[in-house]
Length: 70
Image (cartoon, rainbow, N blue to C red):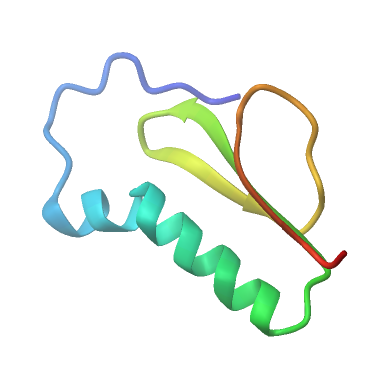
């Protein structure tokens, strides 16, 4: 995992919106609606990409959201 611990400049408003959990959830919903059978939103710990949307089920404490067909 790539971390940016020494990042001192504030994030731009656009980057803040793109890095938000709400945006990750919207991307996951679009992937699911487009036919992905499993989608997970995972916390990464990286300030520049705090959430990652993965087209698979992920097991672990960093999972924020799972979408799956029953």
